[in-house]
Length: 308
Image (cartoon, rainbow, N blue to C red; front, side):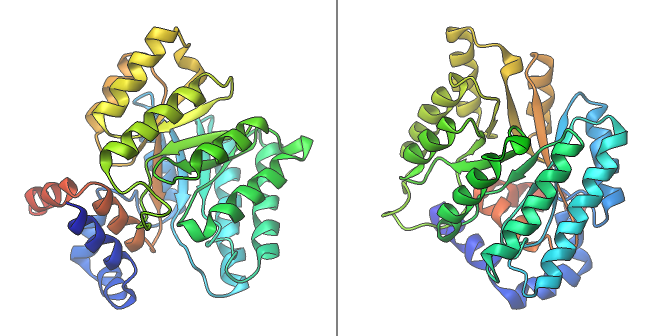
């Protein structure tokens, strides 16, 4: 299984295959399970459909590792449009973005300017910006940027971050972020990292995830527990009940198109669930990482590809 995961991660970085797949009809058809569409209107339509099922959403305009400042500013503008579209909709919706999309590889100052403008916009519209975590080369820069923005009093509560349970450094990072009162999305991690930096085995990653989940849910800050793993969800349920934690003080987070049955059952149980809704033309790296996270998705696609 680890070999299959490594293969999909390697494929996610293959630019030649990416260009071919993104332009192909079969590729777009396969992606439709996990990607809401290609336009802002598609994303808002998906958000409304999920809201009708009692689900909250976070919207992600796909794209990463842009190559020019103009591309970074254009990517940021899409998020400004999203925030403007959410404001009058009354949806429980926020946005998630990546620093490589905001231009950090070109200039840290460019990325900071883009994200700072979006966080100000979110604060003005009583919304929230989540800065996604990417591979380990970006971990410290992501933490530093989010902490800098959150330190401004007008931004408090309007910007958050993602922490990956498989990284060995995450315990210290969580302690630092909680001291600042920063909202965290806890996930297992979706990038290929060396054993020196990340736990290589599922057992270790699961143990880390559960330990961090307990810390977050007792912190008094509103966090997201992002997992589709029934064992991790069960551990969270058990901890919430044992500690008599109010389900309104946190949320489960799941990906668009994955375990929709589980999303619905958690809502019925009284838990808050937020669905990560990606959209846009540049869906290929995201799609391949979803297959890497859960290779069983390959079998799902194979079984359903020819169905209406």
